[in-house]
Length: 90
Image (cartoon, rainbow, N blue to C red; front, top):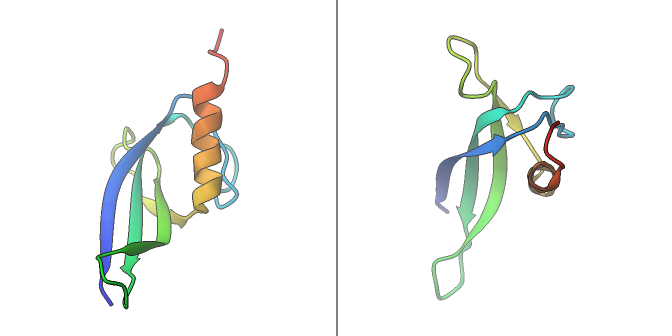
C-alpha cells in the first residue's frame, strides 16, 4: 500500500479553537499536511484520508518551534467555516 502526502495552507482571519489544540489559537496562516492511503482492490486509483495534521505556530512566526497536531477533519472544516461566516470585527 502506498501513501501520498499533500501539503497546503489554511488561513484563519480570527482566533479559533480545535479539540486537538490547547486553548485559543491566534489568527494566521497554518500549514496543513494530509496523508492518504491507497485503496487496494479497486479498478481505479483511489485514496482514503488517513491523517490530517495542522502545524503550529502560524507561518508568520519566525524562529519558533513547529508542532504537528493530529486534528479531526470535520472539526477543522467546522472551524474554517465558522471563520468564513463570522461577522467582521468592528
